Length: 442
Image (cartoon, rainbow, N blue to C red; front, side, top):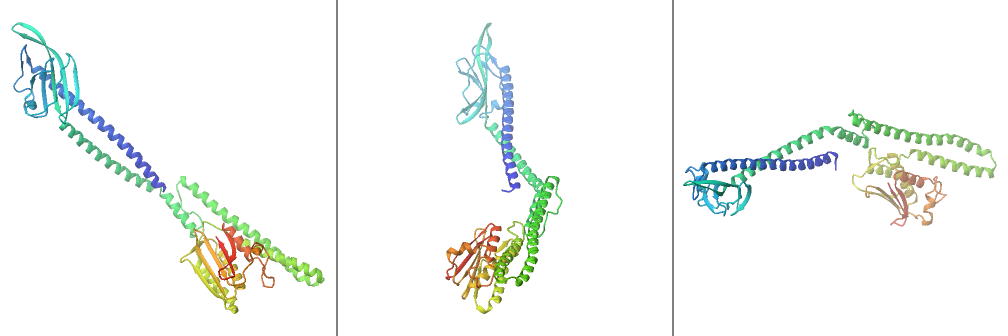
């Protein structure tokens, strides 16, 4: 998962949680405020209703206007009741005609209750207030315990809350989208130096450039400088190693040549011994020269076209072994590329094909394929083959299968050395043509 995607997903998760909590908090605050406002309104209406009531010992008189138009309008959704101590309705507003208002309450004197009720599949808010009402009838004074009830249908109230909720959600979602788009643009701008570094590293990997050249912010500049330093040190170290081995081998060739020239003046018996040692030293020198030329695997380098290199080597073998009239066949995956040193690949192809053509009777087949991100090279011939008990011996330096055949006996050991440098290996077995099959994995 990319760094940009991780930040976007994390920010989206945080934003969703924040918006959810914000929406819940704002909705709760709005509902609380609306309920408080409704309660204040009902309280005002209740006090006005109590002020307009005329109560005597046996009846209750209310003005015809009933103080509020809704109380006089049938099924208006606002209902008023006056009940006695036994919860018997002594008076109710005309709005209750033809409607199903909630059941009124009978409360003790001084008790006030604001409650939410659900009756007849409807929601109501009911405000009830109990009082001891003083009466005076024909000079006789007394008290009556009454409860004034005022109820309102919550249909319109719930619609108001739903409208607020949808509006709030719409604005919050719009803000969230705006924030996410803004954040994505900011991240794209802020992370652009990292993308540029990735592009330059890609060019280094393909061999188009040798170091990171662009200028970057100070947070990334130290990283790019360290990468350039690491690349430079790796190149210098490999160059020093190869030069040291090359210089050592070349410095030994001249004394060996002098010894080779002067050996003619030595007695015959000693001459054979010296000649054997000089030949051995020459073999070691050539091996070390080849080892110095081995670049080894590298994740940063130009990709090579395997087919073109293989075809060049096959053409060379056809010219060298023209007299044997060997039939050569190349089988490989189309468009196969190899990331490594061209000299190493040519050395492997050259040694394997030279050995195969040297021992083959009439046919040599070279198979190259990509096997789980590994380059698999197989060279098969129809020659006499190699006994299994000699395979390990032939992979040693200076050992040859047949001393009568020209060579130094270091070809397969060089191939093994290169394969080891590429974290691979070499396998020798009998081919399907009856000869030898050498398999190299890079």
